[in-house]
Image (tube, rainbow, N blue to C red; front, side, top):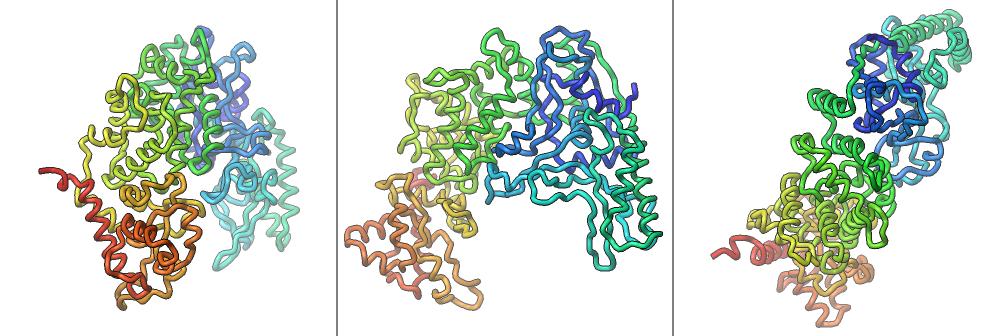
Length: 636
């Protein structure tokens, strides 16, 4: 069966919907623009498979296609949410709609066409320095076609043009101060290139049907007439011809694109099998997406405590991102799904999730997920466990930059889930800190290692549960032990990242690892108040003599010049030189800092002695770490 793109789009959310087993929409603006480029050039884009629900039982979930799509994970400002933008497909009750078909293959293409022709994209542009909750860093974009871009016209009577079809998402003025839609002149080395960006939604009505040809043609003519450029009469008439040619091609090749489709009439279980084979034989969904699809076909139909997995994931992400903004980019659907499958001693491997059974693994995941917290809130135990995991690493100053992997938080989440009486306290913070340090030096916490450790958390658990995170036991169980080579490499490569944002305690994984394992230096301090200090302040770097012309300058950020201090003491020290700082302390306190931080003996801490101090201190660090942790130091 062949129907035009216009036919398909006009039926979306009217007669055609999505089943729960479909994964969420994931295409970005470049992929959507490329799809429309394929349409206008007549390239094949694949077949659409429709499920005729007249042949199905009533136990299937129905979701809408997304019209206004929020690209990416993390927090969303209220002004964006108020525009009915969404990241996840909205569930609709079967009894409230007239549903003829559910799309079981072709969702990404059809939803992309729907967003391009009828909707918009909301994108975040603030980077790591901005806040995703701040609407100033957000834009609403609509898909536009360059009306002056055609492979048939390189210029318009001397006015240089793009010379090819162009589709691009452009910002509107709904959130940005100015719109990017309309005329654009790009300066080049030899001449200017003229473009006219026209929203493609102007070609269709609200529901995707083509608008009256005369109406659109008149709007295009008016835009050409009103172009603010110096053009002769012949040039402006040439621009009219180019624009009209592009408009005609869009109608014929995009709206009229014949999309091949097939319709199947099977039971719900058979359609589930078809979906699996289609997706696993072709471009497979990622394992976490497949797992969510399995949950979406099961959880809404349980006899008790029915819920909708994608909506619950959205709620978890928003809550956890608000509580732990430093980890916002890590709190994703994939991360939360991994935490969930860890609870059933599985992982997000393609071979694993393909073998999941709704009657076994999916049911087990559902029951683990819905377990209440101490207050009786459904799903509370799962969310609380993850929250405690982020609290634990955040309290000791760790961030995604200074952790070997976010998988550490997933392991901590499983620990807190299986041991609900365990608290986020000094003991667990220190245990996590040491585990991070050792894992970093060992280059551990790969996906397979974390998967095995998640299993070990259950296998090693005593009958009355753990009170403290068993990081050392997990590493021992994996037969992972530090060697002298691990220590040497870590000390030689660790550097403080001076470009980190203010407030970061550790700015490099190696710095966190080494200073954490030199634990005598901060064993008597509140671990939540630790702060990395430059022994010789950064401000004095220009005053330190260089060793020679080939030394590469003073390396003020190397590990030999870093120590852990109580944050209040670090602030008091400020830019004071080390000898002056120590002389201002009591004798016992000064000796304590010298000893626990491995200051080499016999060196006066002057600027001239900087190089000797850091080199000898790094040797002392290596010796201390090897003596305490390296396998060769403890083996007979």
